[in-house]
Length: 280
Image 1 (tube, helix red, strand yellow):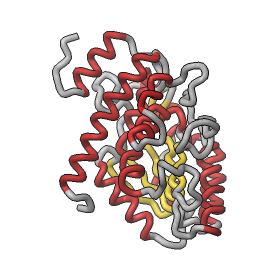
Image 2 (cartoon, helix red, strand yellow):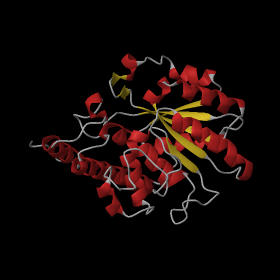
Image 3 (cartoon, one colour):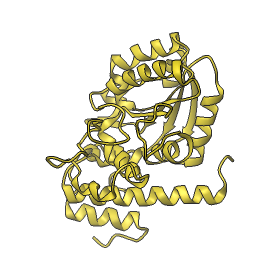
Image 4 (tube, one colour):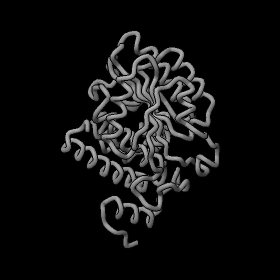
């Protein structure tokens, strides 16, 4: 057990609130991606609130850890967390995906503090994150780059090209967390493009492979500690998650990869997330 029980309870309470706020935002703007945002909640919370080194008042501080959300469609959860950490005002969340907003549907670094690179094209963020890690260790050998990768992204060849390079260059400051929610835009990942034994695949590419429960914030923290302790090779944490976690009718349902939330669904979702029974 790595977390103080009070700290763990605090992080869990944050995650509950983040889910409520993300669903509220997505309903209000009638656009965005609820499923992947809900599945990555504890992963991002563990990184930003426990493990990563950064300065929200100085987002470009050279010695910071780099955090790259390669599965860029889950930006609503990333934005909610950045707002909590005061990278920008929480009021800005109301402008999500609107014309002129700095909070676009996929992360963009041009006007959004805390975003390292634009992501969204599948696999692009992952390969760019590796480049960051390799450059970073020349000047800041104690800093880490975290790359959060969607399981659907691993259908892309660019991911495996980066993986080969990470292994070749022994990028032990490069920590990948796979949000393994098993569902992508058009259906179950096992149907769209079966990946087989993913532990064996990543191991064959020269990675230290770790597994965790992606909805247990302490388990995610422990897995990151284990990755940091491994020297001479990159690590990947395969975090088992549920797409749409926390809202029963969204869980495991590819419909909610990127659908607008209607009023009835919103009412049901909020009832569940706030702990009450839905009367809708």
